Amino acid sequence: MTEQARLAGKVAVVSGAGTFGGSGVGNGAAAAILFARHGANVVLVDAVGEWADATARIIAEEGGAAMTAAADVTNPDDCQSVIAAAVERYGGLHILHNNVGGGGSGGSVVDATDEDWYRSASVNLMSMVNMCRYAIPRMKTAGSGSIINVSSVTALRPKPGRSSAQYTVNKSAVVGLTRALALDHAADNIRANCIMPGLMWTPRLEQGSADAREMRRASTPLPVEGQSWDIGNAALFLASDEARFVTGVTLPVDGGFLLTSAPN
Ligand SMILES: NC(=O)c1ccc[n+]([C@@H]2O[C@H](COP(=O)([O-])OP(=O)(O)OC[C@H]3O[C@@H](n4cnc5c(N)ncnc54)[C@H](O)[C@@H]3O)[C@@H](O)[C@H]2O)c1
Image (cartoon, rainbow, N blue to C red; front, side, top):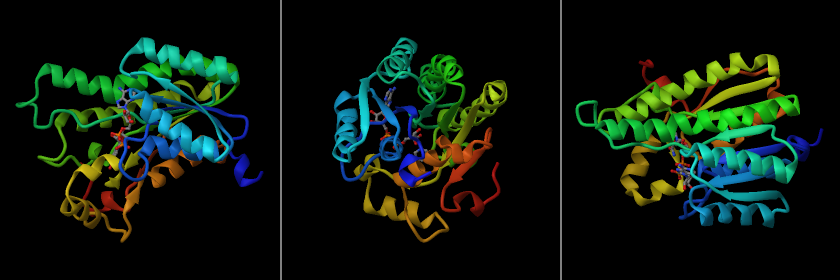
């Protein structure tokens, strides 16, 4: 198998595949570009259509195959439509990369409202549940599948003031969801794995200060800065047949961040 053929003949749906702006690409866009570079037909799902278009242009310039879908993955109807569109366009579905997630309102349970909790659960957890609900029957038809869910080191290392309780709880739930999916659908030859990004540098964070960037880099034991491509490469492995015997795992991609103190 050549390197370019690692995902040949596969159809992949990537949520949050848009490029936010600034320099570089986000975690979802990096995974989508790598999937396409390795031969997959990729469906780029993003709430902001132009951001998905930006990723599609990068893939097209490299000679890859992709379509965009402007959709909000917190809306179950949108999830159903996206999966149906992927199958209609490319004839099946093999890979689902659930990348959408986000911080929430901040603060402890004392500060957050019920609405904050529901919103965070919707973005971080139910978006993945709904995409899986519609994707898994298509993977069964295909005879195999790979689901990749994006959590965060915050699930194991919440930090007062930096991460909201909602984000911590829901990114922990992503780990549980992954394990349940892996067991429930192992007999269908559908694998489910989780990536736990550390303190990556992604375009959205360019709005912050240089000091904040250095603080994130200095909090990581390895002397290199984590990038979206590091998450993309982990996703590429988990999506590929090279990981055909890997399911139910949570893979930190964090430069050793979780080694710096015992997980809670
Ligand atoms: N950047 C980090 O350091 C870091 C660390 C840990 C975990 N993560 C996780 O990685 C994932 C991606 O992070 P990022 O910083 O690259 O993402 P991001 O915040 O830049 O968002 C990526 C894309 O998702 C889209 N999106 C947001 N909500 C959506 C929705 N409801 N429906 C469809 N599209 C939607 C956005 O429009 C954007 O184009 C998230 O799950 C995040 O929690 C990131």
